[in-house]
Image (tube, rainbow, N blue to C red; front, top):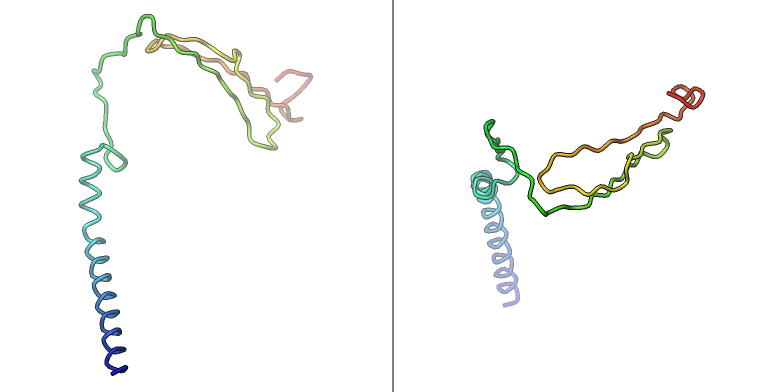
Length: 116
């Protein structure tokens, strides 16, 4: 009787394993069409979108502005000084602006008498 119970348990494990393998194989074949469908619906990742060349320029929003804080970092061990000319700026939303940064090479090859 114990042998019959062990045999039934082994069959159950084999059946569950075979079903899981078949489900994984089916999911592998279905993943490409499902991913394409996901990308088309959400516009995320795989599908790229292109803006029209004749799209109108965004217009500034009167009375709406934001404050921007600029940061500048260099990788460790690089002998450069890199900093924004102004640390903060308040800009109108949608308006074009420009930010200036100053970069100085402090290495012996790029730094002569305090000037570049």
